[in-house]
Length: 460
Image 1 (cartoon, rainbow, N blue to C red):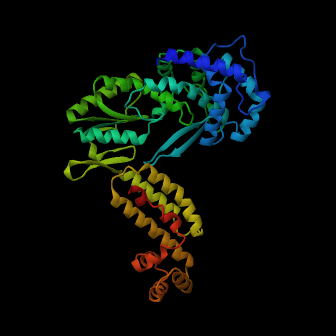
Image 2 (image 1 turned 45 degrees about the vertical axis):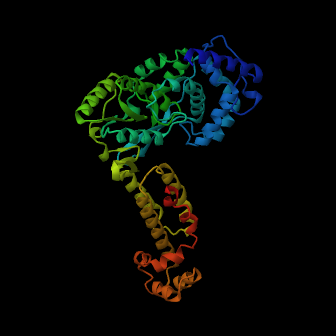
């Protein structure tokens, strides 16, 4: 379906929604939030009207709630914002339709990167997240079908696992040289004029373009001071991933036109070729294409190399017997996992075993859900054994005294000789837990709440 035809249908739906329910979109369902259908200064933006219908805003609010997130510069959380919008929404809606709405600055937040350094986030207010989400729900069905099939990031029905599987198929077909491109501070260096130009070519709706430009220019607050921005689309707002795909799709289409095999997830792109010479040509091409967008390739992280020595979205590839290419967890994510487990299972926390397990469970389950594609059963078994060992050390140290250890082990079914041997060496926590005669009875302790859902069981 063409974008023009889709816009006509969306406009009709918006008009029907306005007739059936009163077009003033209410975040909380309240008559006080209604506003007039059209003002004299209305921009005539059909897409904006579709975004501001009550049904679409209610869906947007549900998504914002699900995403949770912190407050913006106004200090209002989600519930406080909803109460505020009961009376403030009619005026905000009129400003949106007339093109006079000015978003508040985003709140600057930095988080550490797994490989060092910091990633800058810009947290919009809940009101602006709601408006952006409503706009995203209207724009994404129009723009997403126009994107390259090799783009997997932040798209409905696509995910990082699809990109990893595509990469594996390219390598299995004989393309064992990868052009691994990393863009330096991509979200901080998006050129506003170039982005708006590419966006206008796709939707051509003046009201939407004006509102997106206002979000790009809203500035960022750091330490109480608002800093203007002439480039960048800070991570943290619902629209940022879509705008990134709009900008980078130009590079994707050129690679498609030249017949290259590649996978891109947001600003992380890998192109797979058969020789280093071809890889160097592709790297030179990508430098030119990104240069036209005023983006810079990070030369220290980008490379033309054997695919077996690189990672992509946390995974790396290895060759099994018979030349079969398989997936595994890359070294860095594995080290990060162990570091986090050590933090969560420290022996000096003064927490009960139940509390340790409850803190450990969401991290372990989330990690193994993402890395479930790994085809390395032995790694899962080793991690499972290591985590069980750390939990047993915590349990023995909490029992602490020899008589208590003896009593608890006997209650778990340990033989008297075994319980006595462990109790006699009660302070040698790690070594005592290595004995298989100790491991068996402790498996039936409350640690089972976590152990029964261990990574190797999912991997199988």
